[in-house]
Image: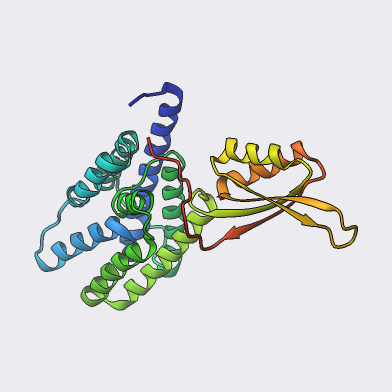
Length: 286
């Protein structure tokens, strides 16, 4: 496990900023609105409220959250990556302790506004973590493990876990909060998809006179291969070369710009891939 001072210091600073934002979001929006975020964070809030309402004692956020993250953190160390897990653990610990220590400030009591802006902040926080190869913990570890190591679709698993939390919250504390929590989670997901694109796929069709150079460039940038095809223009009946490749959406812009540098007359058609079956390279976590 090697450390790069500049790179790892940047990762640490981003993780600390993300943990601060997450703690502020929980104290300012989540608790004020009585909402239940997705994953282990939502389960932690639910357990806290059950203890407070039914057993008449308060349990610190950090205690519950760290306990619930024990198995996911073990999975991270064992199967995903040690540095990745270390930074994720820093995120979990800092978020927990800051949530317990920071005072709560009420900005608004409007639950819809709380759900929208709280979801935006939550999506930004998760995006920040993922951008430096870390997570906010919980189901993120399990989702990454199943998708990278087992090739399994994890969306239904995470969705099912969140449905259980919202159902329990609705039964115990009222369905209005559970429904607003769905708005919170939806806004958070949309924000995440906007700011973090590494798990999105982009399909490229590039018509070029330099197919070999462009296919090599695609591999150098994205570590994805390409398929070379020949075609015929309908108007001039000229033989054409087509480079076809599916890459990560976060690499698409660099690949397209580089393709135009290699062949200024290249014609590039790029569109988002919503479903993909087969082997697809994903950069391993460190």
